[in-house]
Image (tube, rainbow, N blue to C red):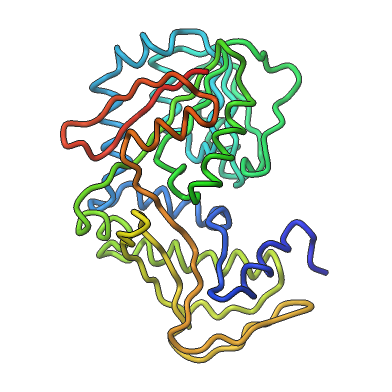
Amino acid sequence: MLLPRYSDITHGLTQRPARISPKYFYDQHGSQLFEAITRLPEYYPTRTEMALMQTHADSIAGTVGPGRTLIELGAGNCQKARTLCRLVQPACFVGVDISADFLEQAVQGLRDDFPALDARALAGDMTLGVALPDDIPRTGRLVFYPGSSIGNFDPPHALELLGHMRELVDDDGGLLIGIDLPKDVAVLEAAYDDAAGVTAEFNRNVLRHVNRLIGSDFDVGQWQHRAFFNPEASRIEMHLEATSDTEVCWPGGGRRFEQGERIHTENSYKYPLPVFTDMLARAGFAQAQAWTDERGWFAVVHARP
């Protein structure tokens, strides 16, 4: 029986073109693959953001202030939270991620590194809104959303998600968020189609995850990874392309895909900084301060109501 919470998958698969939400990349194996992607030579965002935060550590710490309740959305391996915890020494940390087992392991590592920190793991889908435990203070909250993941959402959905973040904080709270800035197309495309094929495996793994979730019978070997920059939309697009005609079935439905037909799995928008700060203002974060790297490839933005 298909669980109602996965009806978005079957709905997306029956669209033309078909689509799968990128949130389904992150089963246990997908989370491990993404961690491997962040270490690839072509994948600049993670190391650029980390270097940026180290370069501007004193300024970021002074702007954010100490003793906050730190809430990281899409926490993953918590590596960036570990860096931020050293800077601002929060009293409490809540990591939120859709991949529950991977998150719990990461938060346990954070507890080991910071014994005095009240560190919690909260499994959940942040796109549906986040309900924090009742004992998490509302005052002094800092929502942390690093890694340019906001770019995975179309602008209207990105604005909606920023609105959810605003709902998590009071007027004394804030948001610290990473965004990937526009740059040379060759640099962008290499970052999403690496020579070792790790990103290709990450993309195809979503089909294995979908098979488990909805009982479908995708043959992963019949799909190839495609990634390219769409200049009109200022975004990288990732797709899975059928290498031959194939029929895919799931309980209560199915679909035939022709050779060359694609499933759209991810977008990654590259926002100019003024465009993004305007979006923040529309979401209720009226004040923003940004730090960028020397090449202007990436920005970390602190925003307040």
